Amino acid sequence: MKNRFLALAVPAAFTLSAAMPVQADTLDVVASFTVLADVVKNVGGDQVNVTSLVPANGDPHDFEPSPENARALKQADVTFLSGENLEIWFERLAEASGNTQAPVIVSDGIATHTFEEDGETIIDPHVWNSAANVLVWIDNIEQALVAAAPEDAAAIHQSADAYRQKIQALDADIKAKIDAVPQEERKVLTSHDAFGYYTAEYGVQFMSPLGVSTETEASAGEVARLIDQIKEEGVKVYFIESSNDGRLVEQIANATGAKSGGELYPEALSAADGVAPTYIELMNFNTSQILSAIAE
Image 1 (cartoon, rainbow, N blue to C red):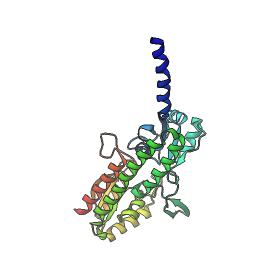
Image 2: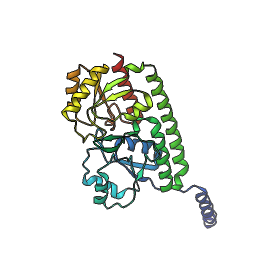
Image 3: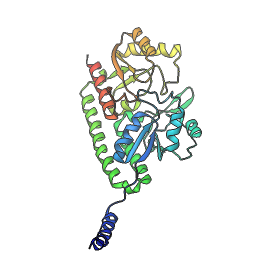
Image 4: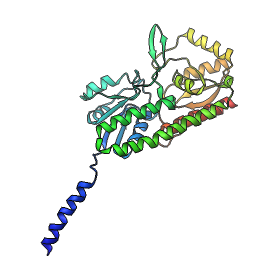
């Protein structure tokens, strides 16, 4: 009787397991910096384990990779970069790690801003400061994760769709809040030119002594011209940035009478217990800081 039960139970169990969808192991994913890592985590959901190479509050321009970063990259199933010359250190890290897999460039398809700087055409890499651009990120990340784990396609699509709706709501909310402020009052001073896409999408004018990379340097003449422009246009407030040195912008503010509006997070999340531990919280925090400062 016992043997007959086993004979019946085994085929039944086999039939049940065969009917269940095959689920892949969790993907080990590397993202270049914290903002991108958070977006990847939200798109991939439970199907991904995400490591950020640049740490919280870290500068993605001026970053020195470690042996630990090389090990993480070596073991990664998928690697994500923002691209547009943001991660100028990545090629060196990839070579050191021995990982020959091509990274996924999530900014592909975004209409980038270009301008001339010292006779060279420069692409502004800070695309995520427009939430509309992050919708392109989501599409590219979703496609890459599904290609890496087709068994989990349904779960990845579900996570991506849910996050896409949150980003669309974020974009609409920021626009509504800033539209309520007169255009002539939307002017601020920051450390470097990281908010060009925010300007284009939401209509806030940012002035800064440095270019799109924190590795650039401003000449005395450039600083003097910026001081004159700030005075002429009546810029009343300045911000330091979480991921880089704020001494130069503070010196300019002292020369113009601009008052401190606090700190912005243009390209790095805060630690988990900070004010901007996720991309959505970063965008909401920056917008709140700007609105509070220009309203005074």
